[in-house]
Length: 409
Picture 1 (cartoon, one colour):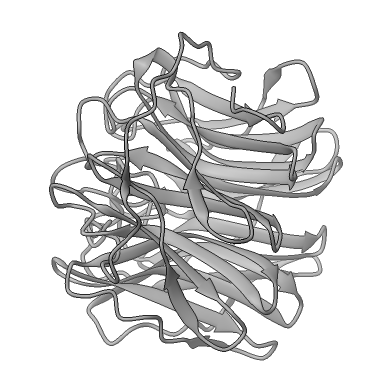
Picture 2 (spheres, one colour; picture 1 turned 60 degrees about the vertical axis):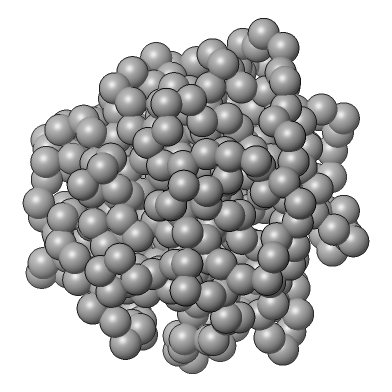
């Protein structure tokens, strides 16, 4: 699930987990500075901060960040990210595996110029994919990066990169031979990116035509797929500081832009999407994300139209960067409290129970942390991945929280 804010905090606020996908700390091409979320009907009442006990996260790689996680079962999961901080000039790819007991880092290829992985998807214990981009915060013209797990090791596979550069922030797979990856074209610091969609249809990744909003910039940060003829991708349509959610749908033949609800003029971005079925889809993000109190945003597709659903808002504001669903009565959304760049963000986890979204207590490793990706294998088993420390800080540590059916630990 990584777009990510972009790589540099502040001026480049959210290259997003990469084009604004969720790395709320990095900023995709500036355009994402636009990390912003959506404003709309009044959200649910704010929830007081959760006081958490002293805690040691399941995954601890110092000087590294996890952007996304994928779960096959309670005993099989993958997490991906990068070493260093979002401002690292030459980060290395990071891949961790859970097989029960503990997370273990596996060797992952990076390339001469460095690289990061923003999203991961797995269809079995022997088949998984990870996507991202080459280079680091100073790379003006990154290339798409796709890696494949063959049951024994991770390898880089060929992937199309537009002439002006490109990056991938979202990934979804239905089998070892069928998958989608989304992101953006253009340089890291350009302010006019365009949507980028790649498709694996058999053995090769190919670029597929993708529409762009009638704005200078458009990018996609996440994708979800239910079948060969049904998929959704979300992101942002950006015109300088003016941000609007971008929603696209695959109908089996081509991708088309689908209108979403009016979220007001606060500026909105969608960072995550998940499908329970072709008639039930969730998308999450934020509204007024760069303002003093960003609002969490949750949208639902009911088979006919997208509508905003009330979601808990922390008193200090909040952003949701990832979403996962296992059934019509069980879904998770994760992110962080506060505003981009705040000194001490807190983890934010919300759950759909079939009737409403409620905030669930979540630990804050090291006293402060943010979550960027979430995956669920069942109603009793889920993972959330992120990093400790200040968003955009120079010394993060990886975090992997686990839902055991009763609490997050």
